[in-house]
Length: 356
Image (cartoon, rainbow, N blue to C red; front, side, top):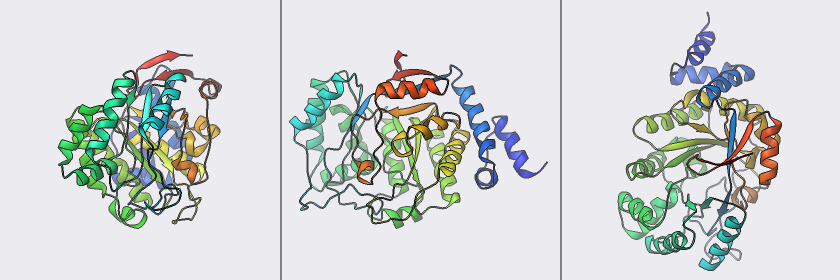
C-alpha cells in the first residue's frame, strides 16, 4: 500500500492527518478521491441531507482603510473623492430593508478607519440592538477590532467585551487571508499578522462569542501554506475556539494592485474538500457562491460543503474586484433542491428558521 493509499485509509476511518499527509493528499490526491472523502465526512457530520443558508446583508459602513491590502479593490484613502462613512440613518435604512426581506443576520464590515474608536461602535451597536433586537449582529473582523483597540488605547480583551456588551453578537473571520506571515507580508503588509488574528478569536471565544474562520487562497501562497492555515484553524478550535464554520474562497484579481490570476475551479474544489477532511472539529463548511458562482457552489455540496452562506442582499468588497454574482432566496432554494438536498434557512448559529 503506497503512502497516498494509507492517507486515504486514515481519512476514511476518521483518523486525524498530519500536515505532511494533508499536503500529499492536496498535491497528489485525485480530485474525485478528495471529493469522496469529504462527502463521506459531510454525511457523517450532517446525516439529515440538509443544506442551509442565512438571509443577511453585508453593510460596508466605510471604505476608508489604512491597511491598503494589495489584493483589495474596495478601499479608499481618507481624502479620495469617493471615500465614505455611512451615517447612522443610512445604516438603519439598510437594516430595515434586510428585516423586510426576512433577514436575520447583519454583517457590518468596513476598513481600518483612522478615526473610529470604541465610542462610535458602542453607540451604533447599542442603537441597532435597541431598534432591531431580532437581528444577529455578526460584524467587524479581527483586524477592525485590533484597530478599534489601538485607537481607543484599550486591551483586546476589554475591546471585545465592550463591543459584546454594546450589541456585537458574533465575529466573522474576515481578514484571515492565509494565516502565515510570509504571505501576509507580501499581500497585506500593514494588516495584523496571523497571531494577531488568532488573539482576537481567542478573546472572542473566552467572552462566549461565536466566530467563523475564512481563507482566501489563489494569490501568492504555496500548497504548504494552505495546509498550515487549515491546521492553525484546527489547533485554535482545539484550544477552546468558537468557530461555527470555515469558509474558503478564491482571490479575485480584478482592479487590484496585486493583479495576477486566481485559483481554478478544480483547485477550489480540492481545497474545499481538504478543509472538510482536516477541520473535523469545525461543524460547518461553507461554499462561496459569491466568488465561485451558483453552479460551482452546487458542485461544492458534493465536495464537503453543507452550507451556502448568505443570500447577501448587498455585497460591495468582492464586487469591487469585478466579481458580482447575485442570489435570491428562491434561487438558493432551487439550487439546493436541484442538487438533491433539502433546503433550510438558518440563523447565524445554525438554528433552523424554516425548511423548504
